[in-house]
Image (tube, rainbow, N blue to C red; front, top):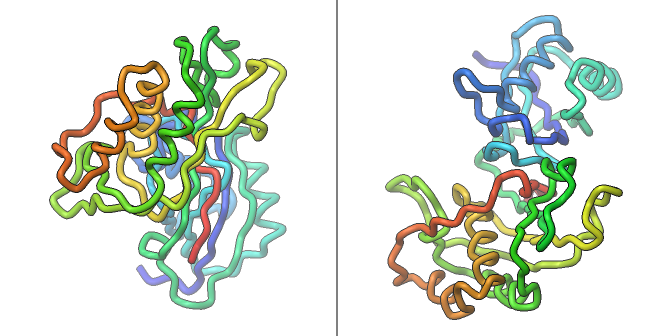
Length: 259
């Protein structure tokens, strides 16, 4: 069906109770919840939505975009009020922009910034579980910071992807990759010191960030070396994906910039 109007919409969500963005049978997804909320906003289902990308189960988003196709003009202020009144408390719409020129949210070039929030040592307060992963081992943070920088640049990420297709492109560009003290997400039940892995790039593979975090944790426990990471990113790596996938709850799609 052809629609007359198109809108770019940004949202925030806590992913802890959702099974990722993509609609699936017998589980709740973000896409399903967004469409359900829009059904209440418009009082009909004569619309279509496309997400900018998939996210994994329990992964949250500070900024996520989807494209709305409809046959009616939508006024921003009224839409934001109605959507947020009908959406659950772990989902919030931020902006709505009419797109007058041809635009494909899936094929458009975009820079994404992901954050992975974590702590080390003592077990965290249970309330932290939805946002912050607590690794019980004592981690060598300085070494992990050096390891994170090794991901910057153009590399081959065969070992940092699960279930690739025959057309998957493994050569990817990482614009920046750092580990810093977390001063972004704060709460009185968070540990006194926590950390965030920040990764910026153009296009990511399935589980790529969580596999990167997994190997950095192994590095922090002195189970692998800096050379191990360097060799894992070479074009002639053994192309067997790494097995230590960090939990999804610590991962957050922080920002998306359309080019």
